[in-house]
Image (cartoon, rainbow, N blue to C red; front, side, top):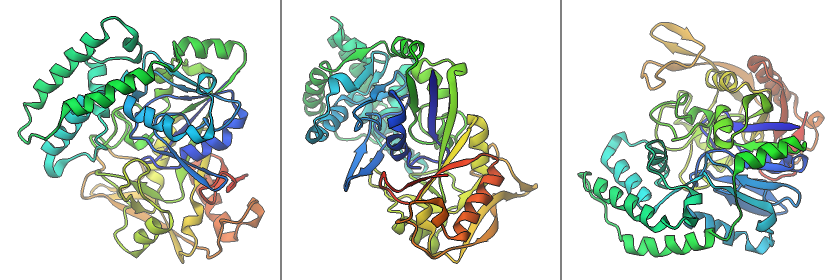
Length: 423
């Protein structure tokens, strides 16, 4: 019996989708435990690129069952579009995809509230993807939400109408009103609800308990990153769910003592989408090069990502709060060509050097303190074994492994499934 957990250790976009896809052949069930369609998990293989938003990243494998857990919030419109985009691959969703009845639904008015709220913040905006995710989680914790299981109930229409009316009253309270045509939005939404009813819904916690009993191997897949966690991220510039290891327990109904390995994914450098603090962010040619070579654009929004050197203060913090047992480093190939590689080992503050993440990373007095390592020029993308790595890249990996006190088991040197090297 194995339940392993995979999550991102930075501000998201670490490459979790690729690693889930790579690991899926070793598991029977891939279970997504939190987040919504703001996630964009990119997979590349056989010359094709795929971006998944709600569906777990093991969907292209013939063996694994993919489960959307209770901690996820689902936009039926985006979900059905995603299903339609997968039509050419003739996936048997009846056998390969399950949805928790306890997952919450994103309504059209949730998206309107998201847009109105973000517009009202002006320059202080959080950087929401405007997918309605935050307002959906607010309704969930406020005990007003609508769950997937509700769409089969006799009073589904009444529940939907009552919550929509509540949202419309809330929209009137915003000074900067937004234009919308709810009737048009509802036509598409209600058609998507009809399509959603055709999928297999389960009591996901019971399903996973039974799977564990018979020895099924389960991989819990996280979305976003640990530094976007609602409790432990760079609040308030965070997402609305628990992106850390604890989220797998609440988002799937898995007991903490059932989790074996925690796989932590991180980039060889650091990126962030949207607003919020970013101590190692670069505004020079080095940052521009990282973004261009790494193709750093959001898979969901298309927004360019902010880029900077790796931040070990933040990474150590994420490793500790998640109990990470193995690390997987992504996009090492992007750093090829730099004469020097900088590593942030502490923050310079008014109280001196600090090697742990402070309460408020937004403090303008915080400056990264760097150590420098020698860079490498070689193209890593065609390499297939660790022994082929240039010495300075191997030194970089060894240095990070020592500093992070956690083994780096996988090194990715490109976006394709095949560009994955085990140590």
